[in-house]
Image (spheres, rainbow, N blue to C red):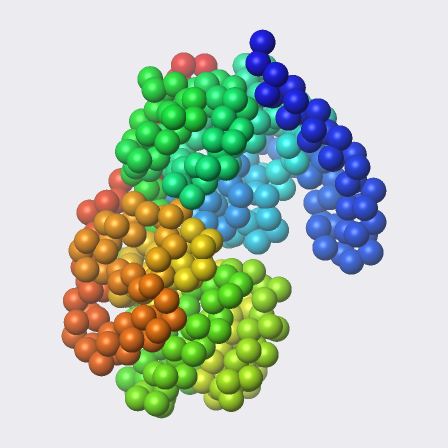
Length: 433
């Protein structure tokens, strides 16, 4: 008998009960994580849950996974209109995104239970799903094992295992094997992801490669009226270049701001929009901006009846606007890549036909990065100096930047259809129930 899962269960339970009093006090004193506190313990007593069958539970950690879940869930419901959908997320930002992207098709949007045996058991008993779908890297041992014991079908869709994370997973390979061999279907993004998850113990006959569903998020080219609204909101001068730095992580604001300072010497009307990955970084980024003698405004305080945009740097302190803002960008910087954080999704920017610059650390999005780079749509740089030089080059050569953007858009269009393929895997599982 393998001991990895019982040991994990014991350790997690011990850690859970040790941390619970402090967590409860912290959440009630500060207000953070207070909303949904009981849901994180698996208590969905007051929640409105779906009625009818089949009942499908999608779990997506945060905004990026929610976006992938949205297109896959939509494709699933097109094949099985009677399917009842429930979506859970780990983060509160994910909750907001799930309500926005999936509110029209999902019966319930909830916070996921912590991977504590009592919590996941209570949640599964209450929801009673036919299929539990984990999106991308959401592999929770107690939750998946509890679902398997109940006879609930399980799947991973848009699955990815980065080279960066393999070291961590190998250290608990026995646990990973115990969990992965019980998952009914693993629908992975790339052949590399499939190879890695098989090396961790997943059964080869249950693994398929179906591409990246995030390519299906690409919509039509920007609506000119939307672009006009944004230009007015941001008080943009004619032909003023906009650089959008999306989902930047701790340690990246400085290099981005330094590069922008250099650009301003050549392009004095340029605007930088910085979107931090976590909103608690907003105040710090504003401080770093002013320390460089650059003017700064928060997005929530400009336009829509507020003050006009006059600063050279705008820090995005709202949720759900980044994707739309790509439409007015001349160049996009993909955050999480100058520091070793695995990068961020660059497909949305490419879908808008924008050239993308990123750092060397794109391990979590390697397949999409390589595909777009091969087409000349993505430019990887080694460091802050390289970032400044590449941004300046692209602004200096707008026609070349436009060709790069169009190449990215073409790659996105050619790679659409993954959502339907991932959904087909789920349909097959439901038909076998």
